[in-house]
Length: 231
View 1 (cartoon, rainbow, N blue to C red):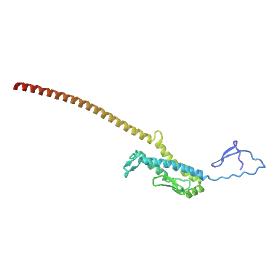
View 2: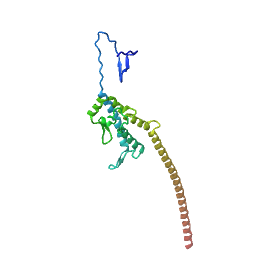
View 3: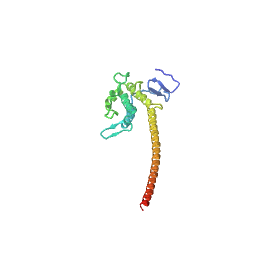
View 4: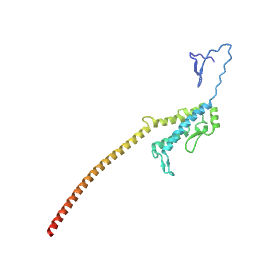
């Protein structure tokens, strides 16, 4: 195959491969052999990075929304539908099958040796199956994660709906802030009412003291008159 390019960097000769030409080959030079193989270790590392990010999100949400009846404890977001639903949607996004996979035998994470623990975290539990799927069709593995319907793509889309500037979490925060402002206003009104009631009570107490004093003065006067009459 004869290939002519204006650059020493060739990215359209072999799909997914970029060739960097370093020097011209002389007629007396030996033929150059090119071999390609899948770097399964690098792919496994990338998959593990994905799993770690997923596990971190699931663990965080679970700790914040969990209700432990036996310990009588509850997370600060327990009972908040926004975050409990996010946790449920993340899990569903990870486990739901890809509807149009590149490989009909690889449409879910479980089919490449990835499974869930009791707490909802993911890990590669069958390394042999994982390596087997990579060896069979690395493009199908990539598609499982990165296609338009892939696991990674739909989780990214889901999180974007929640985390963008005008997303669900932002709206939830605004709602919480509004509720806090309403509570503060009610507290302020209650404080004003209590201050007014305190003023009224102080005024009534003063009037009561004055009335008591007048009563005591009257009694003293009557006693004096009564005493003078007897004498």
